[in-house]
Image (cartoon, rainbow, N blue to C red):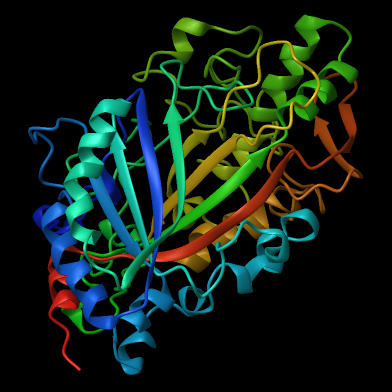
Amino acid sequence: MTGRAVAVLELDDIQRGVLSPRPSPYAATYVLFRIDDRAHGRELMRRLSTAVTSAADTTSPLGETWVSVALTHHGLAALGVPRESLETFSWEFGQGMAARARALGDVGESAPENWETPLGTSEVHVVLVAIAPDDTRLEAALDRARPAYHALPGVTAIWRQDCHALSTETEPFGYRDGISHPAVEGSGIAGSNSLETPLRAGEFVLGYPDELGGLQIPQPEVLGRNGSYAVFRKLHQRVAAFRRYLRDNAADPADEEWLAAKIMGRWRSGAPLALSPGRDDPALGADPSRNNVFGYERDDPAGFTTPGGCHIRRGNPRDAAVAGVPRLHRMIRRGTAYGPPLPEGVLEDDGADRGLMFAFIGAHLGRQFEFVQSEWMNDGVFFGAGGARDPVVGSGDGSGDFTIPRRPLRRCLRGLPRFVVTRGGEYCFMPSLSALRWLGELGG
């Protein structure tokens, strides 16, 4: 990686939501809009260009508070972006998430016909996301954005999901979340693993060279440059079922926690098995300078410490020898919990909807999000485990297995049910600030 030129990112033109880690704790809101009047939709873009925070603005008066905006393929078409321009975007983006459902493992209960209305339909044009450290500042962020869409009768809010990240930084299954994020060359933001060489900017921001030296940029350049693709997914989590499965397959509470760690690759505190294989270490789990600094190839190539099929090793094999080049499939991942937490110790479902709003940011929908989802999460060939799926988010049907390498005898969990159900999602494009202005000034 030495000797190559490092791209100078135009941070003042890139949305802050692309690169900036989220505060902790924080509150968030996703609002979806439909554009019924082209002129009003363009006016919305013009107004949002002044409400969206840039990646260069990290010391705004509102602190760790910002608004991001993204558009679906249907949304760009509703604004009147010419067909010849739309055809320069990735073909996955053009198809949309619902059309890609089978490849993503969104079948059965997770199939698009079971998604929440209007997710996955041609009705969704604009996705507005507001992030803030607490509800009070979240409302301030929404107040800042509200004039952009109020008094525009041709723009209609059609869906909203409120989310939150707890001070414990845990997701509904009880694990510390949001630990791992890559360093992006030129961003000025450090990655969470000092052992990982920063990735080229073009892996995440369009218009810059990527790891292969390629340059992805939809046309015209003013529209594509400094933008990113974004994947939004609402994932319902069956917390009670997950807890029962652990209890039913464990000998005692200590064994239950050991199984939970082997399935995830981390103890619930966030401490990785790679650095604390025998017991949980909450101090390590809470230390962002240590809790993600590890690899697999030198110390654990066979997965005796961190199983090859566990959730975090599937999502990011790091330096391990697998089919494929892990650096080409890295993505910026952010998850935000929604719904009330299930009280500790409760083993029966209370009927509440809870889970994660998942967000992926990258420049390559196909070889980043779709590859990881289809080849690593819902298959095991890449590390020699046949058709085994991810034990946490895989599209299980009650017949799956999870193998834990162990001497003298490996341990195998059988009958893995589906713990996570897709409730809907969208493939989106996050334009630059100058692209938002361009969209606001479109003629025709």
